[in-house]
Amino acid sequence: MKSRKGHAMIELAVSAAVMVTFLAGTFQFGYTFYVYNQLVNAVGNGARYAAQRTYRAAADPDIERGNQAIRNLVVYGDAQPAPDAAPVIANLKPENVEVRWVLNGDGAPAAVNVAVRGFSVDAAIQAFAFDGRPSVEFPYVGRYAPAESEP
Image 1 (cartoon, helix red, strand yellow):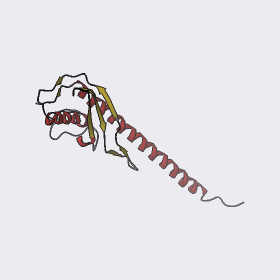
Image 2 (cartoon, helix red, strand yellow):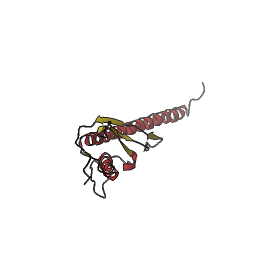
Image 3 (tube, one colour):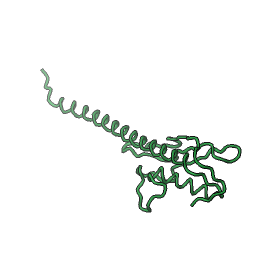
Image 4 (cartoon, one colour):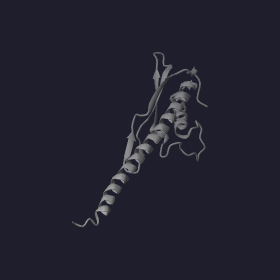
């Protein structure tokens, strides 16, 4: 009969490598899914806020100030965050949020689309890029004020 010494160590090493790989993959998927879910909630909240706020369009800077408030709400959870406010999702910046207005024939907003662009999640082993997703569009139900300026 041949000696079987050492086989248990080899089996343990192989099975441990497989288990660690599965555990790391599960962690990576779970963390990425968690961050994506946070992004979906933040983008949805920002789009709902945008769909209900007053659209002031006296000049292009007024529209941009309104869009910045929407971006801030997505990133910080507040339209006017404190200077030291931390983002709701790590590494998300206002530049990663795109606000696009769908205008009807007379220039009044009909809908608003809010999306995440150029954002990536570093999930330990691999980074996942989210470009154009999540994205949500809501019909505009707020007040259209073409002669007002953004405060």
